Image (tube, rainbow, N blue to C red; front, side):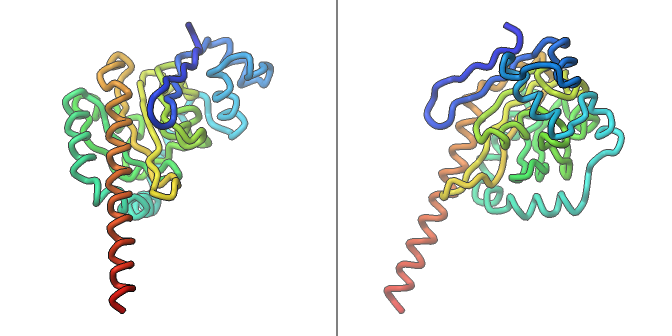
Length: 235
């Protein structure tokens, strides 16, 4: 069914699946003539419209939106997850390479910090600016897995025409927030490819990788707390 949103029960936050909506729904939303609540995917499109996102997406492709300072800041912001979980994330990147997906680690603003894999999809990813330093929040690109996962605070998949920007309608994307031991979102992990690769990465895979990364963070935090406690007792 077009525009369906399905919640999938699992341990942890439920996965929000966004399927394509009808083009006339999109046109009405852009014009501000539609009750977004009557169309599940349109709720997210309406938020994108109100944020000022470009429904064509061409402006952001042309301007590049790749910023060296943003990239450096994103790398710094995600170092605390990248370094302890590097083996896990690199393994996920290799799996994405084999399935023609690009694996993305963004910071909590939606700025791409690192990309891995890609395979035959790598050139398309670069063309669409799914590259380090690019901003993928909803204000910039409308409904997309990275930006929408940040907006709703849960795992999100966005299929083809469910993307707000038409230029991204060829993509299938799955993203999930990564949280620190205090529950704060510190990064987003995403896997993106062409829509015909739908199903190559079941949601359970990326969710498991993200949860494993969180466990590494938690273990590191616990080890640090234990060390501080020991030092305190000694001093």
